[in-house]
Length: 351
Ligand code: SF4
Ligand code: SF4
Image (tube, rainbow, N blue to C red; front, side, top):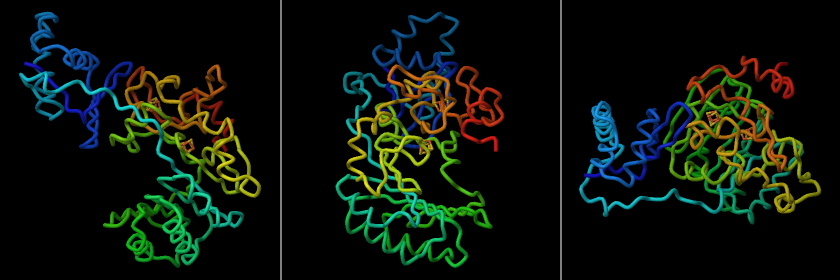
């Protein structure tokens, strides 16, 4: 008899423990590293072959592991091993293209025309000033008419003139609009309507608050998982325009590749350094390379612990805003960690 892990379930080994990720049911479960090793052995050996290789005292643990995997629908037992061939990790050739724009009076909405030829899949728009609903309608119409973008999310400053129904109607009128986040709101509220997710938050959001790593933000879908294997889980395929019109990897990254006043997005994309972080996976980032969460947590290259660079000069330090220690398996508040204070001072997070 053989044990086969369902193809939607992935196992990732960390320093002190492993996880099993169910990319269909969208959750992960901690497992001991000894179970990780057994699952790997079972990929090519029968249950009896693996049992014969372990000590008698460990047989009952082996049986309980197998029971756990089957009872929790992570896999199944079969006598037809040949019908279920081992599936290699999917390799993807290109990250999905996503675009961030911090709209301000300095940025003309004609920039949308440039998105036409860039094959952008997802667009995130930040409005830090009070939004004019007619202008927003214009922008959304342009996106639909000119580009092939399939998902739009918006972050907007709270405006008491725009009520809940106005926002929800936008979702009905523009099906590509998937999420609206209202910052500096007097209330905290999340509405999951049929057309979009509307989140009211008291927080004053800016890109300085971006890059927080917490299990709340882990992503379990198969595409994200496969993409994290091959590309940077934040900057892969990302292009941004910051509030001053600078073209960057993300609005918080220090390097600018020109300003939209005199540089086209295509010219910036063709700059030899623009894609330098796109292929940097967590397997090459210090600390993260030993962490079991490395294919489900989003990376951050804008705010790092600033401890390591590789031989191409790329920052390969752990994201600053992560409080997880894969060498102890414990989460702690990142901002009070004494080892992070120097980097926090550099980014002026101590102010
Ligand atoms: S690099 Fe960091 S700050 Fe920039 S978008 Fe990614 S997570 Fe946010
Ligand atoms: S240590 Fe790295 S991989 Fe692990 S949770 Fe933190 S940022 Fe993610």
